[in-house]
Length: 196
Ligand SMILES: [Zn+2]
Image (cartoon, rainbow, N blue to C red; front, side, top):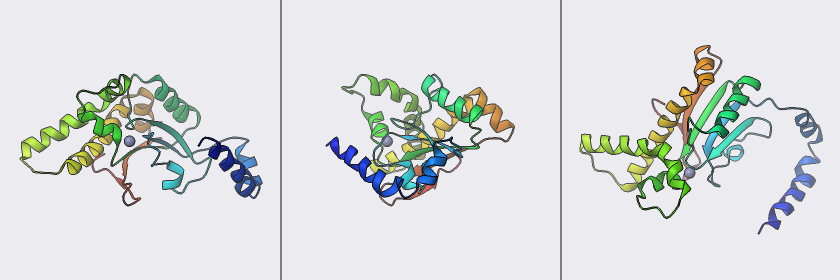
């Protein structure tokens, strides 16, 4: 129920905000986050909980399938602000296993209008994994294949990220590092995606 959120906020004010007035008052004067976090909108992967970070530490952009689309003005503005203004030194793209967005890449007859259009930005990840499976003649379960596509999608979105001119420039000047990670909901662990 939606009122639970406002009840929760009242508890936050009474139990957390009041006790840490100084901390929150310093935050109200400005932010100096040290990482830009690009992840899926999935409710089960909330960045502050899974990384034990506090308000003020992580600048966040989330969408279906943790996609970086080079024609996405929303993300472009987030990137420009993070890099040029906040001078954030690290960007993480964090995918997650069990991602509904990635599973929807297999849905060739989707009833939805916008999700398939959005996911065209991730389709190459599915193609690359399927090509690899075919070439290597390996048997794998549906879940194993999905996990590979989730990981490949992180690599693919990092490639898209590196295409933004200010990302390219900042990484060349060694002012910015980009990282590809994946979150496992079944263990709570985050791991780096190999060769990402
Ligand atoms: Zn997801």
